[in-house]
Image (cartoon, rainbow, N blue to C red; front, side, top):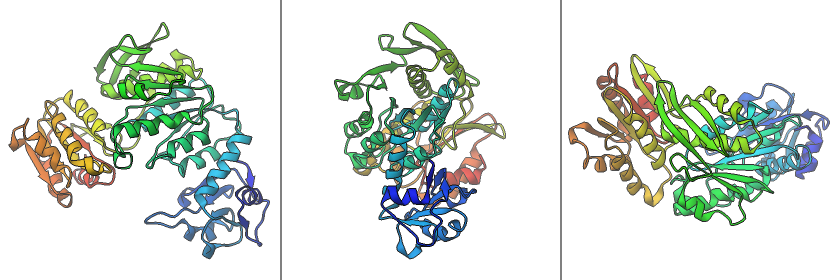
Length: 451
């Protein structure tokens, strides 16, 4: 962005404090006060359940500026607006429509694997273009406006991740970012409490098309997705095993460093060596490579760039500690990602220990969906440790296919006991999978065991 404080007030309909320097210029915006190091970063004072950014506004306005919506914190070099979130959207809309209107955006959405796909797509696209990607998990109606505002006029392409928690949000995001292309990863059960069914989730994800003009979408070979695609959609279907699809993979195999396969698309074949495990990683990277090619990237360069992929945070972070192979995958969890993680564990050596926790935001479907994970444990784990109030249903289902003496269940509050069991059991040569939703105590189990 490139707005003065006076510009911010004018565009948002806000009130600039009378003792402000209206000509102060801002080129970026951030809502995290800890990350603001320069005076040209505008502070967006957001409120959350456990924080209120307004308490930092006065200090940051001494050399910089802020957008606020609480009049009690109105101070020099601040702009008072009815809603900071709405103000950010309005600013981003102006920046997108009037200053970076030629930017080509690849939008990524789906239930599982969005962030990994975003990072893969950035690698693929950056091999050919000057490219920007969504930072961290800024994929919401609050985060994406800030991301748009931080894209410079000289950037040619952007890979933007689109997430949602309530109906209608993906459509709003799409109309804001105006994608040239879109990619949908696997549609699962995440946020089913808000959307009622997998079909409802799929319809919401497909509304990523709403802000698109003459663009395309790349989708997995999924009957539900294909049945709900608008008739006028320009789409490419990607499969890991169906050679009649528009794009498909062949000769997929696991190597010590990850997955290796060949993508077949438009009469050409591209060898991909990906430092990630599991067929779900093959699917996501294939979707990405097809999308990058459709955005204009050179297929050979894009395929080669995927060899530099690194998992972000605790998203299937595979490493070794004291000779124990650890699969740390505790950023998010849904039945589909649980099954994918278990399939990775299935191929590992030594004693295979699955430490599974609660999947959140499943509402009335929670018990049945946790039971589905218990059924997926078959043949994948030699020992199952469940931590959490909902995770007990994983154990109950697993009892029908595993020896009961190999299954352990702990309430969330007893995470220390679970950690002790993991520490006493896992030996050199074994593999331990940690998988649960982000806001659970499974992270503490990992911390205590130091795995």
